[in-house]
Image (cartoon, rainbow, N blue to C red; front, side):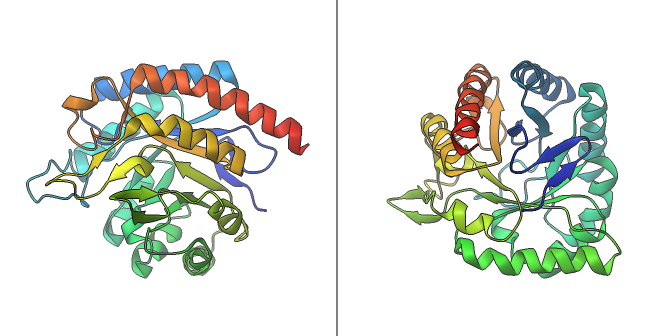
Amino acid sequence: MHTTTIQQIKIGPGQPLAIIAGPCSAESRDQCLQIGEALRDRCAKLGLSYIFKASFDKANRSSIGSKRGLGSDEGLAMLQSVGKTLGVPVTTDIHEPEQAAAAAQAVDLLQIPAFLCRQTDLLVAAAATGKPVNAKKGQFLSPAEMAHVVTKLEQGYEQAGHSPNIMLTERGTFFGYHRLVNDFGGFVDMADHGWPVCFDATHSTQKPGETNTSGGRPELAPALARCAIVAGAHAIFMEAHPDPASALSDGATMLKLPNAVKLLDELAALHATMAQISG
């Protein structure tokens, strides 16, 4: 299996567990720093790799009236500043090919949203920047079908003269029971594509389209994250907020910041145990 490299962080078999975490939307610089510092410091104490996550634009919302975020100019500038202040890599999602180059100047890992993972132009534009790309699996695809996403990314890198640098993320396997359902056997199938696999613990608790916004059961996220570690995940993605009820987006699925920090202890211990068993 290949190793994904994001600045000084290496993700894959035999590497420390990577944590990709932060708020859903970048609401303010101070709030991003508050969340990022708490997660960064706990990860450092536990020997986990940490990548700060926040979105500058939330284009895939249930309602046309939902908050979108700060936008490209202000949002990307803020994320770049937060990354430099925290001293950690930063990731954000892009929704259009035209956003790829600007985002690549500001952050260290480009994220492809699950609903857009088949968009050829978006994948090729992200890969053409040379930055690592984390593609989330759409719930309309089987893990095996992510082979086509990997091929598009690999060719996009190679056509632009770059070496491929890819990660795949599971964020709820399919829709059922009025919520997202998770199939942890899919980790094995996704890993067969040759790139590290991440698990999105908080978005996997979504109840899409519950009203004019998506609902969720964030209390399930810790159990799902633990299952993902046992199934072989190389990274865990989660969203956290000091007060999810007041968040501009995804408040129904985000963990309260203290709970997210506490969860890191459990995941670090479990990852160490699994490394001993497999080693």
